[in-house]
Length: 93
Image (cartoon, one colour):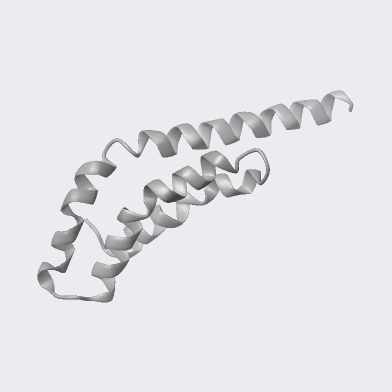
């Protein structure tokens, strides 16, 4: 393994750790959102309400999968991004 391969391997590990830190920090405001996510259905059972509800409720599961499988499948560290995209796609403001 030459120097450039070692550099890119170290950089990849740093990026993976950085993403995991961001996902774990976003777990802090997750609890209030999770407790209030049921109020999304006050306007009726719309697809946006379901998308918001399930993206909020399944976020910790996605973070857990990303943390557990980061060594075997490093690309799975981006899995919680699907929940974040779902949260914003639901029209949550």
